[in-house]
Length: 175
Image (cartoon, rainbow, N blue to C red; front, side, top):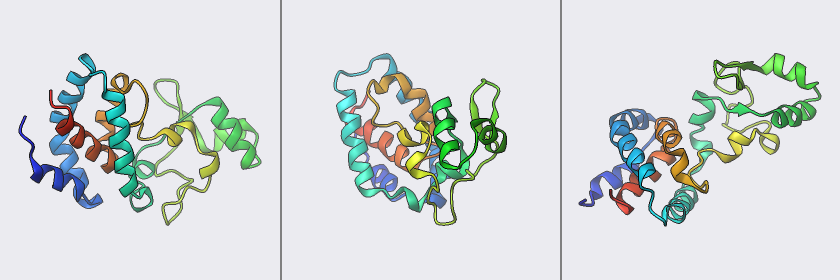
């Protein structure tokens, strides 16, 4: 596979305004690539992903975007509910009733997006106590990365950093 420097530079310069269009244009290609990667994951995949993740998040400031908080909601575990309810001085049932709903898969999710805990400057008002799903997002540094390639493909539509990581991965580990 030939390295396409123009694509890499474009991926590095994505703005939130151009991100959506670019992500949609590349989704099919990225989804296919990640699907192949899942079937024959190279032994060094996790270390490559960790390097790409670390490099991307040295230059990415999530506060300039917060698209994940504006467009998708995390799953809440029971321990997330209990921890956040305690901080908000609510009973877990009251927290669930006020902020959450059960989705079609039986998971607890926000009643609405953008996230009610996101303020006007893209700060999370419960940051120290945020759900596990938020702490780990976008999951690009997770061990056994090959197990979450479908999730990563979907996250390329939400997170500009994830799109840039996948574009860099395609260059680093061509299939």
